[in-house]
Image 1 (cartoon, rainbow, N blue to C red):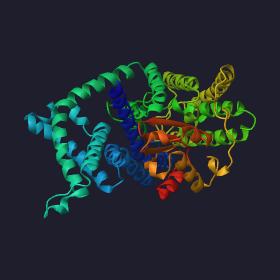
Image 2: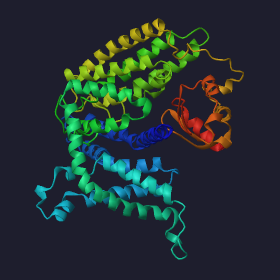
Image 3: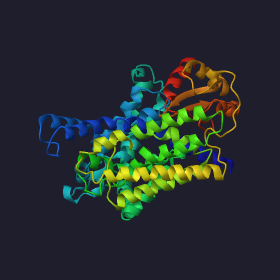
Image 4: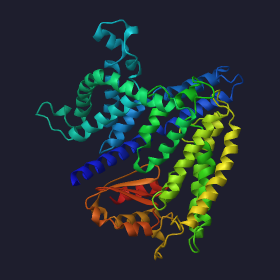
Length: 487
């Protein structure tokens, strides 16, 4: 039983690291969206081809959108490797080029000695996010395994990190052979899975929205997103929306419903939690909730708000997931469509206005106002009815030093105190961060003082064996910089 639990924890930890690794290439997509959006804004036909400048902007933006899989290969390899080294990213790219060349329709046609038009449709989709992620995982594993390899005298030039791209490419040859037989079967299974959800229409979009939020605590929402947002099974909602190559009123149905939630719903929840704060905690709670609400509204970055209550009040988080599913269902049912490239904030909403695939966007704002009051009233009722310990209501010890709190700009002092709470710098092996989470690998988990961390104001702590995720907020990168100096 212990071994099963240990294996499960390691798998969850690996999936969370994968989710963090995907954030690097995904963060590039807003640049493409801005270029494509401006390209549509500056011309008059609505098609993006009436002026030279609009054509240039569109083509440059589409360079990024059309090469997301290879960005995934490099980003996952870099993120999953134990060191952020260029040879890992290079290996990921080489692995991706290997599998896409070996399993291209032309190559398969040659292997099977059949006309090109008779090649399985699966091989026409081999260059996708799945193979990009798989290439990155293979490269990262090879980097971690062979980065310190020593070869015999005379061959030592090719040892160590130089050996990683070589062995990664050869390994990917054997992986490609396996995929030659497995990919058509896997492709058909994905088509069936996506088809069943997508065949449910608006109801399927609602189910997706519910699961999207529900899987965030485990970091497993990224694989689910890739099925509907990217070209894994042919839906490719993000790509088709920004490339204007989908079906008007349908393309974007897995995106639009997030706007009312992120721009209005979560700020409504933040207002409810701020007003429910106890005396002495009101000022800090309002400051945090206000800043997090602005981030959610403008950029669609919701982790600071969501992690502030998902662990202390799981009932509210379940309610949040249900509301998200409801929002996606309503938007899809009535064809109120807008799209995003990074997240459903006001910035992407503005960029969507001139996109040909957008439809009845104003109704998303009307629905957003409804969800603002729905979140505010339901969260307020639940907090008081069930006495939920949302931020500002929990009992905290008085801090002797202001520098020990997250509500300070003295990140150097804060880093020292945080490391002390984690058992000292000798107990911390590695430190990394994503958008809002500090990720630490420690030698002795029992030396981590979780109560002390909570007193400092962290929004949540997730432990998987020796790996700790400490929810800090958008200022986590400033803190990480100081921690790395100390380490």
